[in-house]
Length: 313
Image (cartoon, rainbow, N blue to C red; front, side, top):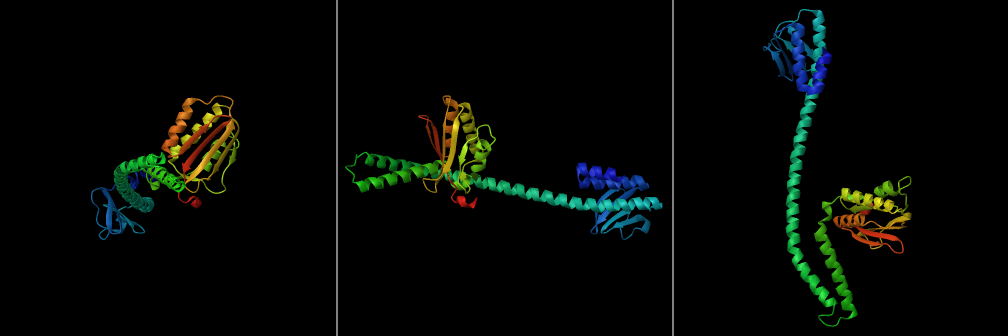
């Protein structure tokens, strides 16, 4: 009896469990109607409408806390009375479960609305950024063109101080162009690089390497799926060339803007062209600068965009 109601509630929810409880009550007592009341309100009913709790006879009413099970016809048997008390207790439990289910549904609706609002805001931000980048790209190209002409001496001879100033202007223009290409840093969550490197090149892996990593966290502004694919492609490339004496070092010699990842080793086979192209494509997607040297030994260097404050972990 109770197991039938509990299984129905487990499979279809507390509301279905309450309906099953009242149907079991009707079959058990032969009454033409039964209802469940809680907090002064009728929350479920099966069959004909029974009297209200205030008008019901003692044999028509079973109580468990604030939950009332009301029958249309009085219950005569003591055995049935005991079973109905157990059903009333189960009704209290099901009402509590129904309240939790309704709260969960309300929370899901709220979260869905919040997600839609955030998605709309992200679309608006991307549209605004794309428009701003388009407006800035043309004057930036003009500046870079004039800087290049002045650096080649087309505007006359340059003093050493003027050359230094032009070099700084050229670097600033290049960084601005890279920023317009990548987009703002807060659109890409920071990912930790060291766990990925240890999982691929650490002890016990297919291609163990000597890892020289910073003591603190190494967090980069790169989409995780792209970073994972880059590390896996690098591992397949080294394994395919039977690389040995591989050293993988991460440091930041160029300041707080980038992490430098350097891979060195000796290979027994020529580097295949396809993985190299894939590494280059992924580096561009990550907004990273990529350089590869194969003679006299393999040396791959990648400069990854660094999180603004890597010390946060």
